[in-house]
Image 1 (cartoon, rainbow, N blue to C red):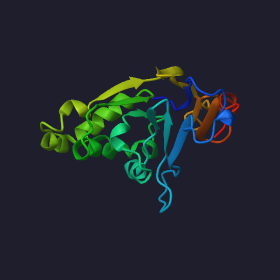
Image 2: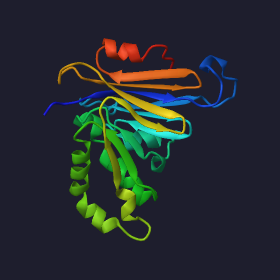
Image 3: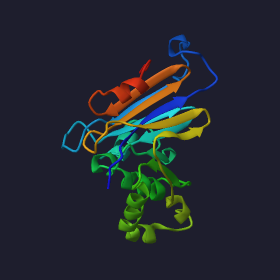
Image 4: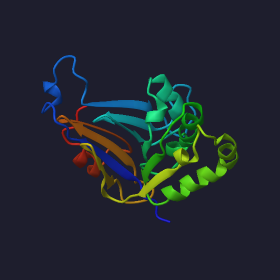
Length: 217
């Protein structure tokens, strides 16, 4: 099966100042990017797995969910119950293995009262189904009138290239990076109030440079 890894540009066009440079002192930033994890599959005492949180337009979007993402959200003083939208650039384990605790722990421990949403390449729905089956015992024994089963569900969208998300002035666009299974990698960019940001996992290549022009972070 051909592996599809994607890149994503987050575009948040909101009614505010035209440029990040025009932002008045004391204003909230147009975009807040939290690098929750920048490590790979290797073990490190200082760097957890790939995961980036982008806050824009009153929304929290998580790109990849590598090892330790729940812990890093806690350390960053971000309420995990508010992180319900997850975008997977690809399905390697170092980009996905932090998802199970993010999915189930805030639900039963912190009372998350809404289901999660996931976007990712073909195979994402199968991966999430397998994760839910793996934790069947936990689910069956934790469901009660406070921890409702419907709040453990996923709405899954399997994606290709192009616009994949557009809500409340925030737009996410996916594009392929590289031409082979070995070289396809991911990127994340964001724009709001005229400001843009981009981060990715791969060597510098033309598709990413083209989409990341005028990036500021």
